[in-house]
Image (cartoon, rainbow, N blue to C red):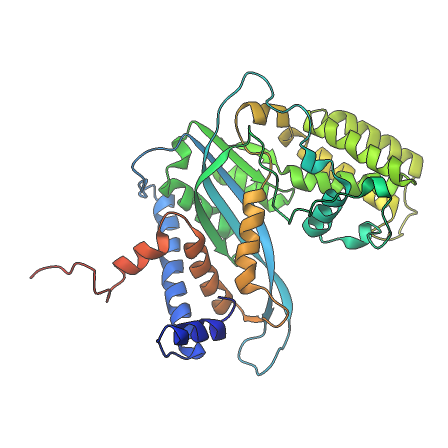
Length: 384
């Protein structure tokens, strides 16, 4: 449900009379216990005493890391005091089914990345930077795509794409230094480290690759293609003047990155940077200034170039986008994010994130928790 009030109303329809405050207290208690179990597993992994909790080692696995935002407030006050947006970190650990091929199973970008309206909406939803594209202008007839645009994180599944089997979720308000061990413990519990093929997919945030280096160094590092697409699209819009020229430039850059020719795109962006010129000393450029857009895109591609060998990843049957993590962020934000939702730091938000992550995991984590929780009527009690 979207709130404690909604949950109380739904339970009342089911014949259970309980107040929203009572539900909130129960959620905080259960969320705190789930967090304790999570932290205990991380401590056991650090001491190398956490055994795998699966019957069979998976063949193909992926760890995708992303982040969302929720609103927090100063606790212990009436009303909203010291409101602040705070990031909640989310990891999606998935087992996959895919095949290894000798040749690139899809050397050309998929149609979903070549439809103007579809791509524009995806960029707006992914990047949250609607000011980078003049989306209020009318599009020419040839640019109109009659199909509905995709939501953020939703990508048309191609035949070669790995198929998701089982998902485990980790979500928390802790910083990246503390979040890494939590994700590693979840991976250890599912025996990810012994899988034959392993991938770590994330956007360009530095802390994501710090987690990769510290806890998943032998996982294939893959820069999320969706974020690359966003940067290419906005850069193409910044450097070209005509609608058709902008779209052609985006398609050319996307095709080059899709085919592993990232160095060509970097070289062309450097030429554009020279042509546009440097910003005056001490000047602060607007976010939509072409010089700023090109510089940001160039830095992003240069930092992630070694993680953008997409043809090799496709041949290995590995994911090239973090669309599953993007979708998971949306599922979690459905509960924790809203215009009128402000969470006390840190207990309230952390507790609900634990319950939400356990609910959205496919490995029965929440059911197992209730079955083993003291006081459960179905839990076997020790005999005297």
